[in-house]
Length: 424
Image (tube, rainbow, N blue to C red; front, side, top):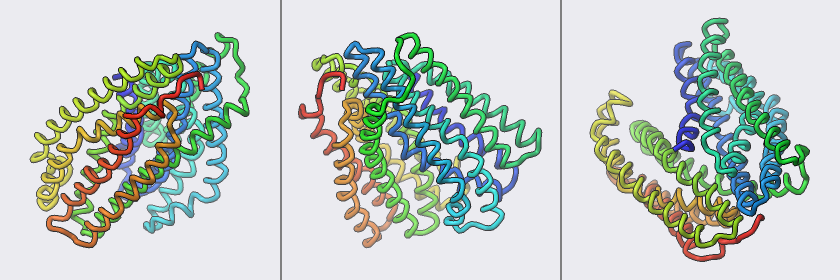
């Protein structure tokens, strides 16, 4: 539950920016949309900084090496800082070019460029926060990230109001407020890491071996995340070809699906921490028991969420838009989504289990296989254009792609090759 709260707090930063910038006009809001898309893509791809750190820390903790666990987490934070500095160096001279790729108006591009160029200075802090959350999750502490995220969200709200309206800085003020809040959160985590290292009498200096190990595991997890993004982008691309109504409906459906994913990802995070700890302690029976329990929770949560989605399907359209065509298109797709949520729960849980086991290479390679299975299904939907097209598109994604992931993850989990005990 604390992990769920922290997960929900993260996207709330962008939602808060959207709500406040929205009162500045369409150009400012459009600029935030472009800059936000770029920043979220970068952060989404670099989530491996948490996913690689959590199992590494949990394994060492389970093996009884708490100082080693702290060092593994600190190495992950050093890697995050290095990547953040590199992103600033690469992003500042190219931010205007990246914004121009979206083909917006000059006013929107100006707002997007302003927001992005300022927000880049907060990327190292945000990546430090992600890696530090991986450290604390590996130490079986999910409450501290929730507290830090909640306080950070409140500080972000106050700072944004001050800079946007109080000082009249507009969209630039929104970026400045968020950057300050991000560095404030990073500072809290740095203090926690320093105190933990001193308490365990371990070094704060980066270890080349540890940083290299985190980077190596992270590259496989980056490839795994990239395959997920490719599947999502391909789905949106096909929906675009069906027309504006279908694209708008798919945007609503995807937004709802990502919201559900945050809930189910809380179980995946539990899997990362508990499985890594159990393998580090060489307690294989506990690992298999936790895996079974997580699968049961994932399926049960999927059924409950699916029933809620099915009940809300007929009335959700007016919440998002007044367009009756979108209302009509949304209901059947939401009903199909409701049927597939238990499958998604199964997939997300096993994904967390295998990440916790450090099975990043398999996740990356199977991710490529899943996309290769999914693309022919997408091609058929795009070419055949069945009527209505959108439900068939969701069948391809919600049952075809997610089904392929369920098969590859399920086959791996049924075997024992992923169960590697010990501190590493």
